[in-house]
Image 1 (cartoon, one colour):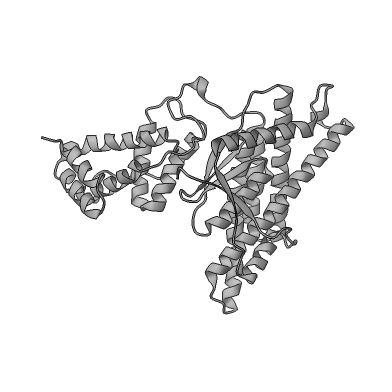
Image 2 (cartoon, rainbow, N blue to C red; image 1 turned 90 degrees about the horizontal axis):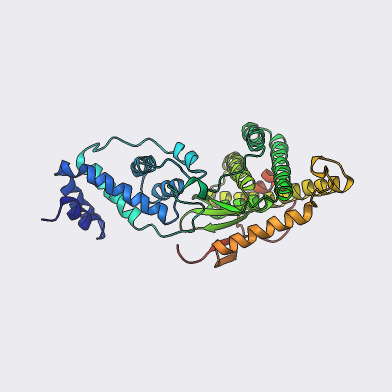
Length: 400
């Protein structure tokens, strides 16, 4: 006779509709001896996700988007259990695992409800497509792992986090702008120092990649903001709108900078948008959605120019200092020239991105439709007029 677990899976995972889930859950609820195998099969589905290029944060993000919070807890429990068997985890996995929610008790609130929720999760995991890997899967030998460089990273990231935390907390826009500008200058300076160090030591370090969630609502504006932050920090961002994330390609110190700055700017923008919207509501307007969309579009576009200008200013100052023979980077007769070093790294990032995403599209985004939202969003970024007529973002085609 076919095992109960196989009967339940045949009913729930390989057929459509709630009826199949109910039938499978009923079989499992009636047979407690299947519990251990049910959980083990779930770990196997998670392991297959790693083999297809997914990481813990990716799985949790999709489960939250497609199912609900209880399902997120179930996924977290499977992920924690499956990854606990590895002595070595890839970079960034530990921080992702630390951010997992607590797993709920098994078979609660009752055996049927628990089994039904678990089978719904398995159905989603079973259908995960293969995506571009942004690092090795767990279980890779330590020699095969690409570990982030340790040069000056903890101190610099601590300073940047502190600046951005102050920018998020202040109620004064001018102070937030100054703090964010200082953080971007530190990021640009750190990127230059790392590039020169790599050139002097003939480092074999290659560009890497990470994925950053781009969640609804207003995901187009958020993707544009992330693209602006990535470009200003010598990275490339490719947005997968179907799966709700962008893949950012760049050298490790720059990837860290992009993650920190994007998260902070999104928080700052949301706070400014909520405040501006409250003022609009007090004046009697009701077009909340168009106001928010236009606000975030303007905010993202204007920041793109600001961040790029900050990076260009720091780069020009560093190049001038090197030519004048000042600064730590210029010490020594064998010090490399800055601009060729940066150009080589930019080319390496571009080549890596094109290998990972050979088929991408560049789409001009439909213009904003709310003048008030656009005006307030521009002011939130910094009141200066934005060049150009509209943003563009890079997205991937196929394999979604």
